[in-house]
Image 1 (cartoon, rainbow, N blue to C red):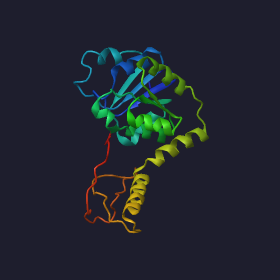
Image 2: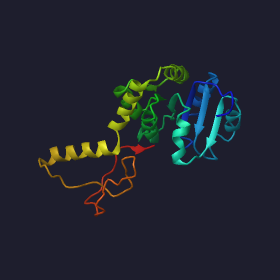
Image 3: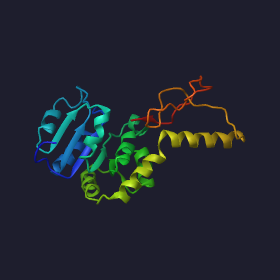
Image 4: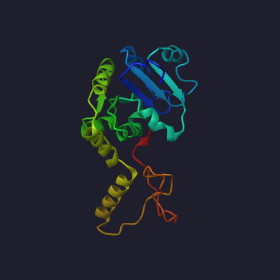
Length: 219
């Protein structure tokens, strides 16, 4: 980060496009805390507001970075943001970046959308905020929460409960209950779903028997 960059730091990691609520970013920047934006920006997003936003001394945009460099940038973040606009697409999406922040041991403040609300009910380290005026206040509050090994482990445990491996296990359990058999038919697709380590959920390489559709888009 630039020398003298203010702390604490709120961060957004991922695609910067019209899914993001620019008013929430501006509200966080207005507090004077650091705002770190990591990821490529859609050139058509905020054609007039973008330049003034990133020109602020407490806002830093690093653009797209290789995946292996993300931990270095996340290390600068005190609180992760999922500041999504309230649209049908976002309401039907699951915010994977929220899990990424938790896996990095960071708390999260996000827009009050169904998936984020569900995670907030599950974890005290996730806050879903409906009121734009309150968003920046909650960001500052979560950034100031002391972080130690116990807190970090608690946050990572939430992320682990939503890993691909955990979901595949749960899905298998549900199929077993539904079929009344200890050997349910495999319904896992051979699309590129991984458990975060690059391992295929269909390691045999055999054709999948069926296809499943996830109930929410990932984002």
